[in-house]
Image: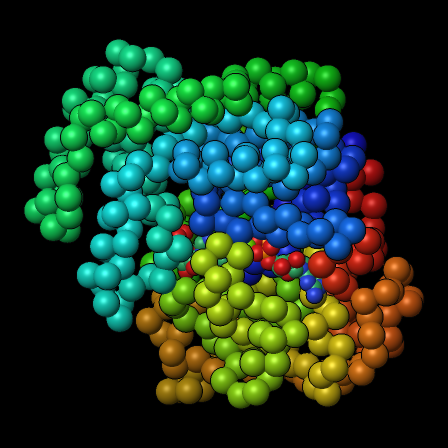
Length: 430
Ligand code: GDP
Ligand code: IMO
Ligand code: MG
């Protein structure tokens, strides 16, 4: 069976978890490769809603190995709470594995994220305030704590002695925040070392055996291509690589182990937080999408900004991820719409210049206006459609038009949050 990397093709919240959950059924291993508890992933099964932040969406199947991979960042209290919540629902967590290489979000990372956003004022990024940026900053600055450090007293003491005095200077002098004592950090580490111990396993060994024995691996992305630190709307991005390439670095296996890369896009577009959004809808249709699509963040509860589907972003995403197909989710949200728009190009209102591809300098985005193709709505309920042919003709036309405009085959159409509200157009794992 093919190994899939499921990636967000927009600004996150595309419905990745729903699609991951579906393909997890016929996979052996599901591995989250980047990001942390900034992610909010929702899976609905038989009317019951499950929300995940760090735990892979495959956990709802009893026999699947679910790995929180080397490229992730872990906030121990949040992970502990997530594990507890699953246990309360009688969901087995014994197959959950945490990579010893994953970095730890320390209490001071949360303080810095909050304070830095406050200091930026109206230039803030609009982060989830989960300490993600500061944790990755320390990782790349080589002053991070990894999960494996929790289980080596010499390493832990040495690192605290080396790193904490430097962090305290920054906390106090740059941000005016409270300093941490060695005892506080040690206590935090010792507490969570104990709680997380049953889950910390050699994930290289698991991946090695999986590849040797031809097991099916599912790489689960968090966030989305346009939030990618290198290829997204920098600086209004997250601090990791959600793109498919990130699946290799973040899981510790090479690109030859990924066979297909389905990208996930909504039938429209949303974004949480600050940053440019060329197809954002200011008129009532934006609010209509927000209400019908229940576009409020899973992690922070913030209202998501809503806009029309942007093919420039989809094509950019297709390139930087090497998408083999696209899954379109939330088609049902348009069931009562008269007209639906798709942006096919941007026009610079200063000089008339047309952009057919994504312009990376976000400072010019405010001068760009979308050029739209408009489609007729279908005024019919799509939520029970099981095949493409069962969709109303205008919905079929919309999907076919997207396929043409984004130059990427559409493999899945989702018409509701539940597992069974999914139309498969192609056998992806075959
Ligand atoms: P993720 O972060 O990409 O996994 O997406 P989120 O879970 O944050 O947000 C997607 C939301 O849309 C969740 O509430 C899902 O239950 C819901 N959803 C997913 N697919 C569909 C769909 O096809 N139709 C509708 N109406 N909701 C969907
Ligand atoms: P999932 O996996 C949507 C956004 C934040 C902010 C920017 C940086 O559910 O798709 P960060 O806290 O990462 O430093 O914030 O990225 N962001 C997301 N937006 N879905 C997500 O995850 C996101 N994770 C981060 O809103 O704009
Ligand atoms: Mg989400």
